[in-house]
Each structure stands twice: as C-alpha cells, then as structure tokens.
Image 1: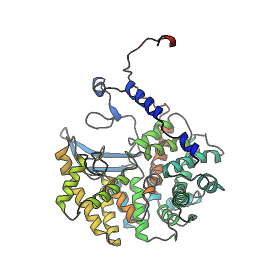
Image 2: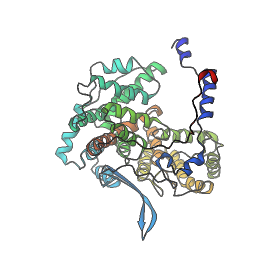
Image 3: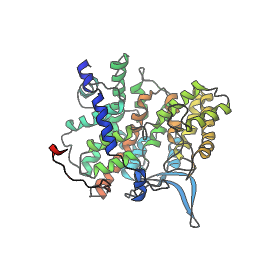
Image 4: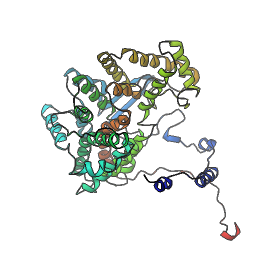
Amino acid sequence: MKQQDRELFDVTPKMRELAELCVSKSSIPAELYTEYAVNRGLRDQKGNGVITGLTEISEVNSFKTIDGVKTPIEGELFYRGVPIDKLVDGFLKDDRFGFEETVYLLLFSELPDKEKLARFTKELADYRTLPTSFVRDMILKAPGRDMMNILSRCVLALYTYDENPDDISIANVLRQCLQLIAMFPMLAVYGYQSFQHYHQGQSLFIHLPKAEYSTAENLLHLLRENGEFSPLEAKMLDLALVLHAEHGGGNNSTFTTHVVTSSGTDTYSAVSAALGSLKGPRHGGANIKVVHMFEDMQNSIDVRDKGAIKDYLARLLNKQAFDRAGLIYGMGHAVYSLSDPRADILQDCARRLAQAKGREEEFALYETVAQMAPEIIAEKRKMYKGVSANVDFYSGLIYRMLGLPCELFTPLFAVSRIAGWSAHRIEEIQNNGKIIRPAYINVKPTQPYIPLDER
C-alpha cells in the first residue's frame, strides 16, 4: 500500500477531536435504561432473553419449573426436537460422519434414511465447486488479513455470479443455501492460503475438494499441504462442526439472519450480515481468546502448581492478568447454568485427541481450570445463575491439536453455522412476513434551531 493510501485510513488528531465531541454530546446515562424499563441487549435484569419470535429449528434449556419453582438443570440442546447427545451418539456408534446428516435434519426437520442421506451428501458434493476463475479473481487477486472479511466479501461476490440472486422463493433460497454450505470450506481455506502466501511469505498451494470426502475430511485435505489426515482427526473435526451448526434463534448471528431476512433482501446479503455478527469477539471469536489466555497462563506461572493457577484466575477477574478485561474466557454462557452440553461432548473429544497426540498434560490443565473457575467466579461476582465451561472452552484446544491456525477458528464456526443460518432464513421467509422493527425511546430533549450566523 502506498503512503498516500495509508494516510487515507489514518485516524488524524482532528478526527480524534471530533470523536470526543461525538461522545460528549451523545452519552446516555445508565440509569435511564432502568427508568424506561429498557432490556439492554434484549435481556431482562436476570439475563434472560426477551422473546422476539418462534422457531422449530432448535431449543436450548437450562431451567425447568418444578412445583412452581424455576430450577437449574444440566444444559439441554435439541436440533429439530432431537437431543444433541443422542444425535452425536448415533453417528459415533456407527463410526461415520455426522455433519451432513445434521444439515439435512436442520433444513428438512427429519432424520434422513440411508438412501436420502446418500443422495443429499452427493448433492452437497456436486455443489462443492466455485465459479470459473473465482479463486483467482476474488481471492488471490485481493488477499486480505482477516479471514472473516474475506469470507464475507466472497459471499457478496457470489451474488454477481448467480443468474437469479433476488428470487426469495423457498426453492431458490434452498438452492442458494445448499451451494453456500458446500462452498464455505473452500472459501475459508482458500482465503487463508492467500493470506499465508501474500502476507506471510509462505508457499501457495490450492487443493481441489474430493467428492468422496465429507465436509470435515475436505477441510483437512484442503488445508494441509500433503492433503493427509487421520480418521480420528477427521471424526473429531466433524463432531465440532455438528456442535456448532445451530444454537437457537436468539444468538446474535442467527438473530441477525432473521432481522435482515425479514427485510426481503437476498440470501447473499443476509449471510454476509450474519458473518459480520459472528466475526465479533463477543460471539464467534471467543475460542481464540481461550487459547491465548492459556498461552499467557503457561508463560506466566508454573501450571503444575494449583495454587498458582487459582491465583492467576483470580487476577484475571481482577483485571490484573492477560488482557485486563476481567474475564475468564470460555466460562459461563448467556443461557446455560450448570453445564453446556456441547462442552461436555467436546471435553471427551479433547481427551481422546490429547491421548492420541501425547498432550495429556495440556488437557489436564484445561480440566483443572474448568473445575476451579466456577468457584472463583462465584466468590468474585454477583451471580444470578451457575457458571460452567462453554463450547468455546474446549473447541480452541481441539483445533490447536488438529494443527488448525487461529486465523481459521472463527471461519470454521461459520462453515458449521451456515447450516443453522440457512434453516432460520427459510423459516423467516416462510412464517413471518413482517419486517423486524424494534422500538427505541428517544431521551434527547427538544432544542430550538439557531440560525448559523447566531451560533
């Protein structure tokens, strides 16, 4: 980039001065939110989500009413009414891949038989190709440093290659969604390869996907220079994809999908908006924070000393360690209290990988923190519900043991969650029919207009 181009994007002293003016003139006192009974973040005072819609796609439970009393329970997650642990047990016992079956379930609200699953898997494989010269023109010619932005740019670019992009009939939207589900692994990995080559000085290699491979197998094949992987590695990545595929309509990116879809816009715009939401560190980037937190811990203390670990966790909460944010990343969830069922499954997944790769000590450290953190958080924070490890706590560790780069952690989330976004987009088109338009209360007093020469 030329110097004059860099200067174009610089934050100048004048811009900082204007920013201070902007902030000083538009700060809303926190007490007004209470006065007007505004549920900030669409959550009530106890952290419960405000009901904004209905869905049949998935359900998240952390409480049950027993004898009229709201009682915490072990977390439950259902895909189209099927308990996530039963779904996972089904394909693990058969020693087969589960992501394609999960996509089918989310889209069509039924578990496929062998014939339907085989036909659907082949259809996804047939869609696993990009338009002619797309990789060259849209990825290699404009390499970026952020994989989520590359992914979003590619999705928007696909609009121009679609001969019928604005048709929001269910049949056409389903076709678009299936293509995006099939294409996302290539878009994510090719974007990373271009970053590695043009910004990191690494050799460039582009593998083509294999029709006989599952989504998880193709991800590892596309990413690794020799294209090789073990069956255990592919099965563990497949499991992670299944567990990230959907999580209710209330998460930020899925709600974004509903909001943007309700305007009547095209599929590519809706998915790009969801990607923008997922990119945020409060949503899709949390597992990267977990990995970096553990790296800082291992560099700062003797992790064989449980007393030192406990002290480090306390310092995290006191904003004295790592990024000074006051958080133990990977602990706690907006809905779950006693446990996150996805984390429970991934914990066993991480244990199996650690044993296979000789990283038992690292896994043991994660387990120690998972046991200590809830007690320390309870001591330091006013809690309205329990705290436990969430899905991000173990997923970053699993990706690291698979040799996946941090730059791809959030794009991998998108590769999985595009399945849920697709199901919710179709549901919104089919069942709502009204644009989502929440209400805001103006708290700025009226003021007179003063002519320019009198100011």
